[in-house]
Image (cartoon, rainbow over all chains, first blue to last red; front, side, top):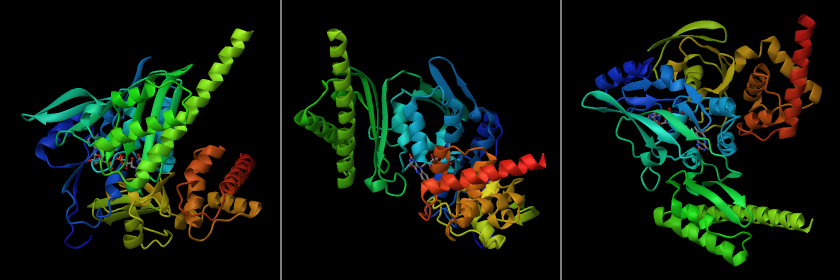
Length: 305
Length: 159
Ligand SMILES: Cc1cc2nc3c(=O)[nH]c(=O)nc-3n(C[C@H](O)[C@H](O)[C@H](O)COP(=O)(O)OP(=O)(O)OC[C@H]3O[C@@H](n4cnc5c(N)ncnc54)[C@H](O)[C@@H]3O)c2cc1C
């Protein structure tokens, strides 16, 4: 053991009631899920500032559960991203699977958990934005008057307006619920290394139902790992009010509108983040233009027959 | 903290800090020389080991999680029959990883084979993590598929 370095106490509750009694005794403990974020901090080890008490969430049986019906899928917060795509592959939205596969191979995603991905404080995972498109909600457990309370919140409300985590201190996310909505168009695009080059990275997740020149039910989320994510109706409306195909000027005005919306919330975006955001929007518009043109010619062909 | 685990087949009882990364335990407490790096979780991939048969990045595994587990490093793995299958695949395809990534890449291939992940996309996704460009993705697919065939034949002979 390193001289002078404290070895933290590891608590391993096996169920939620054990967890709540431990957190009452050690209210300043650190929650440990997959540990990938915690261990990748440059000052992780050796460090004199490490918390003396760690609560390892991995043995809490309730946090590993998974259930579904026709409309929703519900996951315990300790379900790993790997398990999420392998158990949920046939039911989960395609974009969610693509997003997880984009984060990394099985070796790392088998360690990363859903709860850990939502709760990193200084880093926003691309997953938060994508989940918000499916109106994800979270069950939050928190201590009040020495008792454990639990409440479901829309996932978006555990973050502030700029996508920063806004959970009460020591709150635990225990379950995450995702609405299983059908969307014909789903795309996840990331530019830059989300973890190693946070200053310059961005990801955009977008879903909707293109129909002739309309893009119905448009939902869009833009994530900047070092800042937060934005997903709101104003942003959605920029896309759903457009008529496709768009010409160059119309396309540029959509790009400008989106950039001004994100810059209002994140005034310190880097130049490359802005350029990349514009590039991704262009790519999406081009997709939707192609889609509108092909359905239009298909419809024309049908009327000619 | 006292931690009992098995490393390369040896049962050990270690007295270590509970949150010490496995990569450091292997280097400092076990003097294992088969790891090539300690990137502090920046995912260079060079510190791969097998934990209960699955490939993991040892810099992302804390000491308290290895309790009761079996860890195989390249040092221990290199002596096994399974390792020979992969070596044969390197020879057969005339493709060999460079010395920097050889150990980790071989263990990742082992993890792919033992978990039956030999589809092209699975191989590429796993290999992408290693920050070393000594082999093309298509070459890695050839190696894994050759190794899988060699292993299948060996098991068929044994049966
Ligand atoms: C090398 C590397 C590359 C990465 N690349 C990407 C990428 O490309 N895109 C991307 O989006 N992300 C990326 N990430 C970040 C990754 O998404 C996070 O590290 C991971 O999701 C965290 O999950 P975890 O289970 O390991 O959490 P941990 O590291 O265990 O915990 C993270 C934080 O959440 C808290 N916490 C954990 N669970 C809960 C809970 N249930 N309730 C309340 N608080 C909780 C912990 O106390 C801690 O503060 C990368 C990470 C690494 C190490």
